[in-house]
Image (cartoon, rainbow, N blue to C red; front, side, top):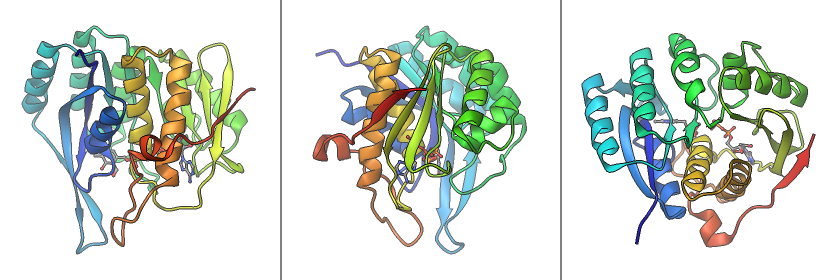
Length: 277
Ligand SMILES: Nc1ncnc2c1ncn2[C@@H]1O[C@H](COP(=O)(O)OP(=O)(O)O)[C@@H](O)[C@H]1O
Ligand SMILES: Cc1ncc(COP(=O)(O)O)c(C=O)c1O
């Protein structure tokens, strides 16, 4: 049996819901063989309101992991938390060497609820080293505002303008996640392939248990591309996967509630409507 091989270049979320943990669980649910190149280890302090520590691994350690993964061969690759310009450049070099076009860039800049980029130099580095390689980029509203240079995005019209700008930066397809932040009665994401805009909508859940949703969405797109789906189909199916995972999100402790990565396979896909806009 030959499995498609999917690589995530991302951070470890020790609490298990996001980061490479989300990616590997999601790859598994899609029947792909997951591999990892770790960039940072994120920890959470129970004595200090679960505040995050982010420990960047030495760049040589990242390079050695990429060498291992590249020697095996990769069918699709995604990125997650990349903490410095050096890490981003190295990730870009690794992605080029995989030779695959199935490249999903999840431009993680902050963890949920925060609105300041941890390290501002990383936005320019993502634009320079990663967007030109992307088959799909999946910013949330905040990240799309940063990458496009348009700042705060509040409407679907703003999202369209940002998607065009990000497409011009080299990503072949752009998915801007409206999520909970967008003032809209559904959880709406905008898909743009350079010519048409699609609005992907699912039920907006009234829940705080969405930890890992962004990583899970991008990992599902990656696995779908590896499995041979077209980009539009890969994104719509991933939305059904993540919406189900959010609908079954659960409380890990008083601070965090992760999505249930296996929800689609256990309970069925969520309903998603797709509208040409
Ligand atoms: N409360 C919610 N109910 C339903 N879907 C949501 C909710 N919050 C986010 N989503 C969806 O989850 C996916 C990931 O988005 P989001 O959580 O905003 O990303 P990120 O983790 O990068 O901030 C998107 O498809 C988004 O629309
Ligand atoms: C290592 C790592 N990557 C990515 C994220 C982003 O997670 P989400 O999918 O909830 O945006 C986090 C958030 O805690 C993280 O710790």
